[in-house]
Amino acid sequence: MTVPAEASSKLRAERDRFVAFAFASADVLFEIDSEGAIRYVTGAAEAHLGLRSEGLMGSSFFEMFSAADQRRIRAGLAKISPSRRMPRTIVTLLRPKGDPLLVALTGYRLSDDGNASYLAFSVETQPVTANPDPEPVRDEKTGLLDKQSFGEIAEARIREAQATGDDYKLTMLGIGEIEQLRDRIEERAADDLMSGVGEMLREFALDGDLAGQFDDGQFGVIHDASVDVADVKEKISTITREADPSGVGVEVSEASVNIDANAFDSKDGAKAVLYTINKFSECKGKDFTIDSLSDGYKSMVKETVEEMSRFKTMISEGGLRLALQPIVDLGSRKTHHYECLVRFPDQGDGVSPFERITFAEEVGVISALDYSVVRRAIDVIARTKERTRQTLSLAVNLSVRSLEDQDFIKTLIAIFKKRPEYRKSIAFEVTESAHSKDLYALNDVIQTLRKAGHAVFLDDFGAGAAAFHYLRAIDVDVVKIDGMYVREALSSPTGKPFLKAMAGLCHDLNIGAVAEMVEDENTVTFLKECAVQFGQGYLFGKPSLEFDPMGQGGGANNSSRKEPVAIAATA
Image 1 (cartoon, rainbow, N blue to C red):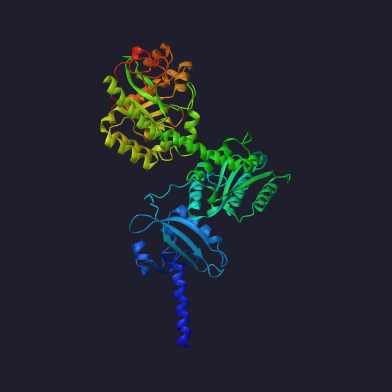
Image 2 (cartoon, helix red, strand yellow):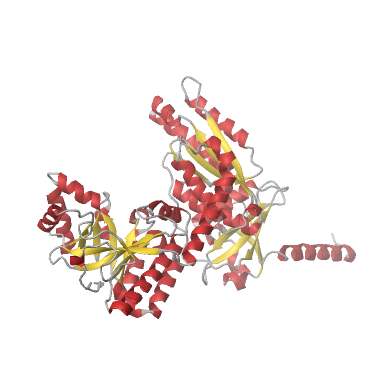
């Protein structure tokens, strides 16, 4: 049948309108079948993918993305219908030619049979790392994300909501006494129970995956605002009743709060939400409960953002001070170097900065603190040399979270490129190494610092069973033996052999060892018998603010205040 010229012209005009509509907001348009095979491509495919459209035909659309993004795309496609499009989703395109590309993906389906879906992406201007995100950690029983993975992905989605204007909800669920129910039923039934809860939570979660288990009976989900949480709550209650031989089940409590993109007037909003999630998990059954979440959530987020702002202002205005504590050679009693301990101007003497430093780590501003301490340490060395001609050697604590921040490392390297004379005078102590996501990636960063001329210490060695595992994965110059481990070794009949073995291992690896919490001469004798070379503790000096080279103002014993030697990296 021949189409009349007038009708054909109208069809072409209609087609052109649809094409213009699609490319007003997208760069490339795909048609894929129910298996994800590409059936049609149009747009700037060659410019962005490095391949002509015909070269993409028949290949898998999903395989152009990381495993994590594939799950997000599949979850989004599962929710679309002829009346509902796939929400705008930021994903990383792994191009066959060229670096990864950040794109905003949308999707639609003209019919409900699922045989053809149409997806379009537009290129985002935000840069993307060349390495895909590591696979998140999951609970074995439920398949849900663990707290850290949930928090990291949730933070990224909240930032995405801020960029796209989408509104999500955060629902925290308390499934009371679910662990007790598991103990009352057979192992297979208990596994089925937890698996069922996990499947239910993922079913209504954003991306089909943004659900996490924080602790026994504590769960969190980020989801679309259209989800009926009461219905989900009832379904979970039903799962527990069906698993309970008595048919009673367990109580399910929930609290939902809006993650409104417009509610955050600060880029710190996502981190504040993550901090709130952590507090929910940590304070189970105490002062922060599932019932208090709805009432206190907004004020808590607001207070957190304000505290973050105050913290960063204090850092940027140079309000920090350093207390220096000597590390002493146990044989000669000469000071080898000083550890820099941060002190905040609004906290009195004797007040531990631990809580504030922990806060900085949890809300993601620890890098700013570490950067400020490094600058302050350089200033202390410069002022001391100017006044006394004495060259101090200092060790600055760096959080693992700072070392995993590529921007921080670039800034750190840039500082010492401009001030190379301070490289051998400043060592770095790696703190919270147990929080490292990837010890081998951390080691790469540490070797970069060592090659630049800095010695690197591993803090709190011996504090956990994984200590020796760290030494296998990380090459450092010195380890600091945790003070509690030293005290336990002093009081235990097997302590001395273990400490001797630890010191011997360090010696064989050409690694120095510093023992913390040295408070009396008996401890010095004990450590020397164990072949530990260096000590730190009140016997040699308490932390002294901004170090007075003349020994005025208290702090370390004057007898230990000899000219420090430079700390050399052995890399």
